[in-house]
Length: 408
Ligand code: ZN
Ligand code: ZN
Image (cartoon, rainbow, N blue to C red; front, side, top):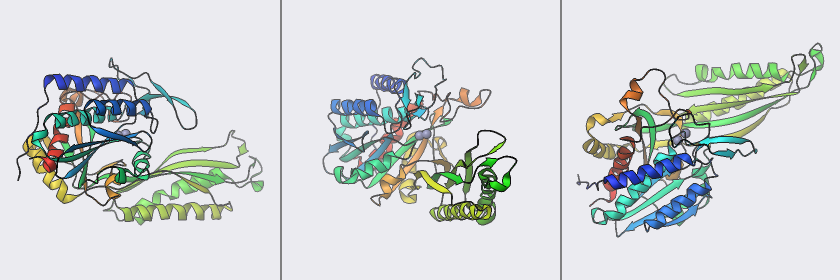
């Protein structure tokens, strides 16, 4: 195995990274609206002398070239969430934004994407300062719209892989509410496939006292929503993972009026594409058949989002984990089960048929984990990762991964 030289974070650079993080944290932007963030990233890459270009609207790609050698990709996501921050930190966000339908909402970096950006930019700076430690090309992918699964696909549709050198492997990492200073990973499936739908049920409205004149979409919806829970319990091998959740159900305005329509949204999580296909087909079958059973027209199904497979190549993962164990200590590198959360990271590698590895780095200090009450998780208004040793660990992991391929 080759020895990896790890350029060291100086106190000055670490402080600069923290400042950049706090700035990003205070100025979050919604998915696919990361205009100021993209401009800032372009400015920083320019300062480092790294060639860069826009891709997929608010995506930014840096191409760090250093002679002949392998090409490696590394992705950081850039979007915030429609969430009112309640962390109490002095760099808390007071930003607002507008959803696609125009609704004004508070915005927060509630998933740690601000850390991902600051960590990757700092890693890039270390690589520019230690050019003798490596040879090759590093493609820095600052991807918008992770939360809505719109960003990776937007970059791919904007010809990411004809504009940027094609890497032999793509890495990515995500801060999580585990112990800061540690890394966790799973070989094979990293995160779940996810599918979100809006289903509109069409019926016929009438007075509550005259059901004979109605086709009741609420009764229809109740049957569908109950029956689709039998997909997992009655149709899927119990050794395989699947979850079907109906998150909203809306219909009607008054207790004595049968409405003409109702609507629900659902979310499906699976790990195996074949299981996903089965669940989605079963959903369509049940939704259609229950409507027929009610004498109602066929419901309208609208796909809201689709998160692709995020699969950690077993060989690439095993090779990388050996480097992590040596760099961070075996006790700080933990194998875990796949997360049932979702990511669009996997699409970037799947599009070009190269392996990818995605791991988690811990963001909470021991006191927070041991404290009373629930530990704030990603997407909580209280999610405020400990800045250190979280960020230094993120830089060390990113550098270790990149240098495991391009290091001398
Ligand atoms: Zn998130
Ligand atoms: Zn995230």
